[in-house]
Length: 88
Figure 1 (cartoon, rainbow, N blue to C red):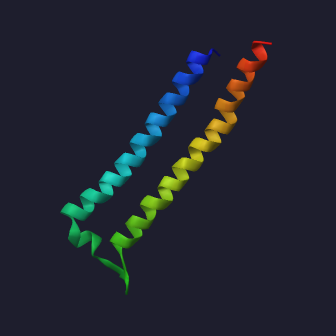
Figure 2: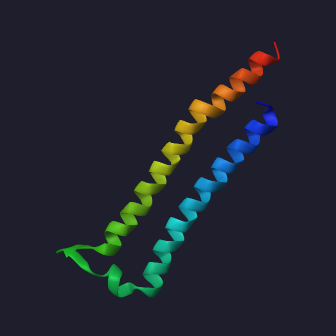
């Protein structure tokens, strides 16, 4: 694999995960703006759908960051190491 291929692959993964995070975040904001009734629905006293959705936005961002780091550690770092080894 060439450095160009490796860079293109990393770029595709980063853009895809960024798009997913943006969709989650803006979906949450749109729900707040246009479906206040849904977001205000109580699940249990003191806990609404909006609070749970907000917490999920944060947790999903962490999970997607973990996915990227795991991918980078397995594939990107290994690709860089193979490029370094190929040049010696």
